[in-house]
Image (tube, rainbow, N blue to C red; front, top):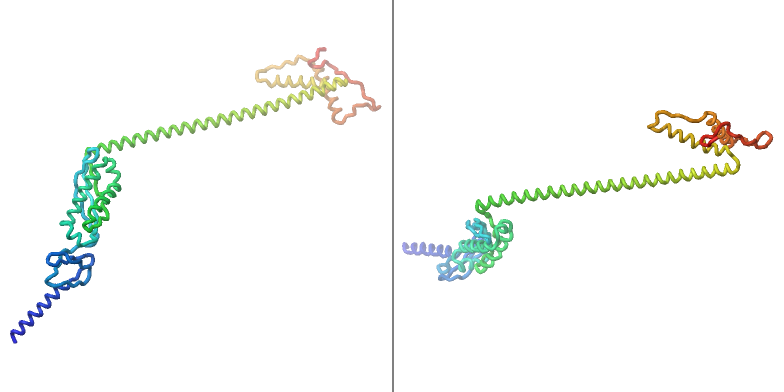
Length: 328
């Protein structure tokens, strides 16, 4: 009975060990490789898996999630012989656990070394200004080269980012002076451009003012000439009327015309700013005679009867005094 109990216990232990060795649970995000006598057989996916106990064993436990690794700092010499310190990060993901386990010895170190060498190659073919201002281009070129290189390892590189680019202190100081000089140059250029535009606008304004002033003078001259023309026409008409009246024997019209000119000349003489004393070298009776002739013309023009009570025209009345402007 004692021997049977020992056998039963040994049998139960063997069954338990067999189950433990043949049933494997793989967590989510991982894949396990199975080796039989040291040779790769298959890959276990996440969940419950059964293997041949005591013959199959777990080879590698590969992380299938996206991972990030730091690319350590290194000095890079650019195309124009400037030395800069560069570091970065790389994001990758294993899509084939068997290749990632057996095609490369140390996957992480291989990816880091590959990134560092390609950073030197890519940035070494560019000038310092390009290195500092074209990070997207550097990242794109690195991603294209590194992803093609790690593809046989069952790895996909999703992103490579250059984190820091640190030039030497003397280059930073020189770049600061250059930037300051460029900004001062742009400020001077902008100020000169502003002054030029201001001068152009001022000249345009003066030009328009002169054009408008010239147009005003031309319009005023045109109006003045038109006024003089009308005045001359009126004078010609008046002279024509007076000539017709004289031709018909009406001396009063001539007296009116001459008196008007005479009085107008004296009014202009009196209005002169340089004339302080006015001397009238004529007789008052002459002026009164001229005014009497003007009255007769006005009477005839505004309804007066030019004939007498008997229906006959009265004889022409001669002025009582000498007509101004006509010698006695």
